[in-house]
Length: 149
Image (spheres, rainbow, N blue to C red):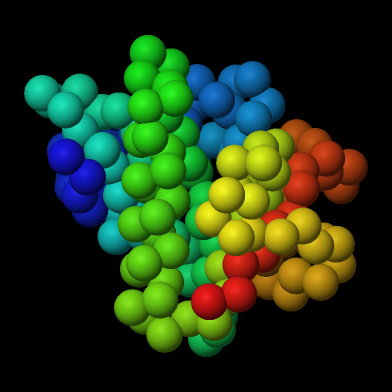
């Protein structure tokens, strides 16, 4: 079942994100950050198990980021990530946003939704607030992608 995240999901979301962050695939998120941004998150849950998560984080009046897309390793390639990203995109449309971006190591995955590669310099400076926390800053090797809604 895909739904908005709830308070009881936060620790499981953090465990999943920490797994990928430990590999350098995404930024880790503290419990404090997750509680503060809980309304940004979607989860897919089956029989009490968290299968995946993704968040839509609003950056400005016309721009949001799809972030923290993570799927449990035992359920990969079953459409969980696609359903989560689709929910974020639909949410962005319903809010009246004009563009959604992501920073990713999986550009082929996001291209399926219509995201296109852009130079990172095309993204507003406000976007880079989280980047300062990254161990790869300032030598980011992620792909910047954007979707016009």
